[in-house]
Length: 173
Image (cartoon, rainbow, N blue to C red; front, side):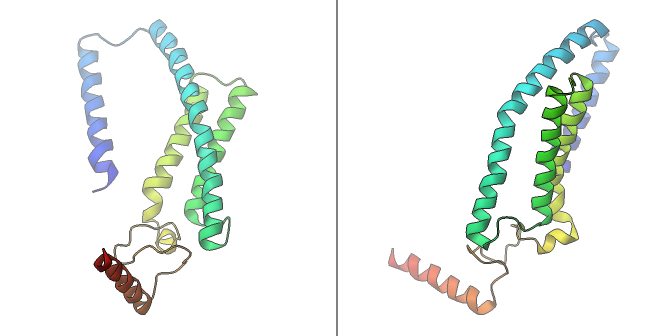
Protein backbone atom coordinates (compact mmCIF):
# COMPACT_ATOMS: atom_id res chain seq x y z
CA UNK A 1 0.00 0.00 0.00
CA UNK A 2 1.24 3.50 -0.70
CA UNK A 3 2.88 5.54 2.03
CA UNK A 4 0.21 8.24 1.74
CA UNK A 5 -2.61 5.88 2.68
CA UNK A 6 -0.79 4.17 5.53
CA UNK A 7 1.00 7.07 7.19
CA UNK A 8 0.34 10.53 5.81
CA UNK A 9 -3.46 10.60 5.79
CA UNK A 10 -3.89 9.07 9.27
CA UNK A 11 -1.37 11.55 10.71
CA UNK A 12 -3.17 14.42 8.99
CA UNK A 13 -6.50 13.31 10.46
CA UNK A 14 -4.97 12.85 13.92
CA UNK A 15 -3.37 16.31 13.74
CA UNK A 16 -6.72 17.84 12.77
CA UNK A 17 -8.46 16.17 15.70
CA UNK A 18 -5.78 17.37 18.16
CA UNK A 19 -6.01 20.93 16.76
CA UNK A 20 -9.83 20.92 17.03
CA UNK A 21 -9.72 19.70 20.64
CA UNK A 22 -7.09 22.29 21.62
CA UNK A 23 -9.06 25.07 19.93
CA UNK A 24 -12.29 24.03 21.65
CA UNK A 25 -10.57 24.09 25.06
CA UNK A 26 -8.70 27.38 24.37
CA UNK A 27 -5.46 25.45 24.67
CA UNK A 28 -3.71 26.92 21.63
CA UNK A 29 -0.52 28.85 22.46
CA UNK A 30 -0.44 32.66 22.44
CA UNK A 31 1.31 34.71 19.76
CA UNK A 32 4.24 35.46 22.09
CA UNK A 33 4.67 31.77 22.88
CA UNK A 34 4.53 30.96 19.15
CA UNK A 35 7.41 33.39 18.47
CA UNK A 36 9.55 31.72 21.15
CA UNK A 37 8.57 28.30 19.81
CA UNK A 38 9.45 29.38 16.26
CA UNK A 39 12.96 30.40 17.34
CA UNK A 40 13.47 27.14 19.25
CA UNK A 41 12.25 25.05 16.33
CA UNK A 42 14.43 27.05 13.94
CA UNK A 43 17.49 26.23 16.05
CA UNK A 44 16.54 22.54 16.31
CA UNK A 45 15.86 22.27 12.58
CA UNK A 46 19.23 23.84 11.74
CA UNK A 47 20.99 21.39 14.05
CA UNK A 48 19.19 18.48 12.41
CA UNK A 49 20.13 19.90 9.01
CA UNK A 50 23.77 20.25 10.10
CA UNK A 51 23.80 16.55 10.97
CA UNK A 52 21.91 15.44 7.84
CA UNK A 53 23.57 17.40 5.02
CA UNK A 54 26.96 15.66 5.35
CA UNK A 55 25.21 12.29 5.09
CA UNK A 56 23.21 13.44 2.06
CA UNK A 57 26.40 14.70 0.42
CA UNK A 58 28.24 11.48 1.24
CA UNK A 59 25.33 9.49 -0.18
CA UNK A 60 25.58 11.33 -3.49
CA UNK A 61 29.34 10.82 -3.66
CA UNK A 62 29.26 7.17 -2.65
CA UNK A 63 26.40 6.53 -5.06
CA UNK A 64 28.45 8.01 -7.87
CA UNK A 65 31.47 5.85 -7.00
CA UNK A 66 29.27 2.76 -6.71
CA UNK A 67 27.70 3.57 -10.09
CA UNK A 68 31.17 3.74 -11.62
CA UNK A 69 31.88 0.25 -10.35
CA UNK A 70 28.47 -1.18 -11.21
CA UNK A 71 27.61 0.57 -14.47
CA UNK A 72 30.97 2.10 -15.57
CA UNK A 73 29.47 5.57 -15.37
CA UNK A 74 29.60 8.00 -12.44
CA UNK A 75 26.44 9.87 -13.40
CA UNK A 76 23.81 8.69 -15.85
CA UNK A 77 21.38 11.64 -15.70
CA UNK A 78 18.71 9.18 -14.62
CA UNK A 79 15.48 10.69 -13.27
CA UNK A 80 16.16 9.40 -9.76
CA UNK A 81 19.73 10.74 -9.80
CA UNK A 82 18.47 14.11 -10.97
CA UNK A 83 15.84 14.20 -8.23
CA UNK A 84 18.48 13.38 -5.60
CA UNK A 85 20.69 16.17 -6.98
CA UNK A 86 17.77 18.62 -6.88
CA UNK A 87 17.14 17.67 -3.24
CA UNK A 88 20.79 18.27 -2.40
CA UNK A 89 20.70 21.63 -4.21
CA UNK A 90 17.61 22.72 -2.24
CA UNK A 91 19.51 22.08 0.99
CA UNK A 92 22.61 23.88 -0.35
CA UNK A 93 20.38 26.86 -1.14
CA UNK A 94 19.02 26.66 2.41
CA UNK A 95 22.47 26.81 4.00
CA UNK A 96 23.48 29.72 1.77
CA UNK A 97 20.30 31.66 2.54
CA UNK A 98 20.67 31.01 6.24
CA UNK A 99 24.38 31.79 6.50
CA UNK A 100 24.76 34.55 3.92
CA UNK A 101 21.22 35.92 3.62
CA UNK A 102 20.36 35.83 7.29
CA UNK A 103 17.16 33.87 6.72
CA UNK A 104 15.62 32.65 9.96
CA UNK A 105 12.18 31.59 11.09
CA UNK A 106 9.39 30.97 8.64
CA UNK A 107 11.37 31.90 5.51
CA UNK A 108 14.12 29.40 6.30
CA UNK A 109 11.56 26.81 7.36
CA UNK A 110 9.84 27.21 3.99
CA UNK A 111 13.05 26.19 2.22
CA UNK A 112 13.47 23.23 4.60
CA UNK A 113 9.90 22.12 3.91
CA UNK A 114 10.72 22.36 0.19
CA UNK A 115 13.73 20.10 0.81
CA UNK A 116 11.64 17.60 2.77
CA UNK A 117 9.06 17.60 -0.03
CA UNK A 118 11.85 16.99 -2.52
CA UNK A 119 13.09 14.01 -0.48
CA UNK A 120 9.55 12.63 -0.32
CA UNK A 121 9.07 13.04 -4.08
CA UNK A 122 12.45 11.43 -4.80
CA UNK A 123 11.80 8.34 -2.70
CA UNK A 124 8.04 7.90 -2.98
CA UNK A 125 6.80 9.44 -6.22
CA UNK A 126 9.54 8.97 -8.80
CA UNK A 127 9.02 5.22 -8.94
CA UNK A 128 5.57 5.77 -10.46
CA UNK A 129 6.64 8.06 -13.33
CA UNK A 130 6.75 6.45 -16.81
CA UNK A 131 10.39 7.44 -17.28
CA UNK A 132 11.26 5.69 -14.02
CA UNK A 133 10.03 2.36 -15.35
CA UNK A 134 13.19 2.07 -17.47
CA UNK A 135 15.43 3.57 -14.80
CA UNK A 136 18.55 1.86 -13.50
CA UNK A 137 17.26 2.81 -10.04
CA UNK A 138 14.10 0.76 -10.29
CA UNK A 139 14.30 -1.95 -7.67
CA UNK A 140 10.68 -3.07 -7.63
CA UNK A 141 10.59 -5.69 -10.40
CA UNK A 142 10.15 -9.00 -8.60
CA UNK A 143 10.71 -11.02 -11.79
CA UNK A 144 14.34 -9.93 -12.23
CA UNK A 145 17.06 -10.91 -9.81
CA UNK A 146 19.56 -8.09 -9.20
CA UNK A 147 22.98 -8.58 -10.76
CA UNK A 148 26.01 -6.32 -10.31
CA UNK A 149 27.42 -4.60 -13.38
CA UNK A 150 24.40 -5.19 -15.54
CA UNK A 151 22.28 -2.37 -16.94
CA UNK A 152 19.41 -4.28 -18.49
CA UNK A 153 17.24 -7.11 -17.33
CA UNK A 154 18.87 -10.47 -18.00
CA UNK A 155 17.61 -12.60 -20.83
CA UNK A 156 15.76 -15.76 -19.89
CA UNK A 157 18.90 -17.85 -20.65
CA UNK A 158 21.08 -15.66 -18.44
CA UNK A 159 18.47 -15.73 -15.67
CA UNK A 160 18.29 -19.53 -15.91
CA UNK A 161 22.10 -19.75 -15.53
CA UNK A 162 21.99 -17.46 -12.49
CA UNK A 163 19.18 -19.51 -10.95
CA UNK A 164 21.08 -22.76 -11.63
CA UNK A 165 24.23 -21.34 -10.07
CA UNK A 166 22.31 -20.20 -6.99
CA UNK A 167 20.65 -23.61 -6.63
CA UNK A 168 24.00 -25.40 -7.03
CA UNK A 169 25.50 -23.22 -4.32
CA UNK A 170 22.65 -24.09 -1.97
CA UNK A 171 23.04 -27.80 -2.65
CA UNK A 172 26.76 -27.69 -1.74
CA UNK A 173 25.97 -26.41 1.73
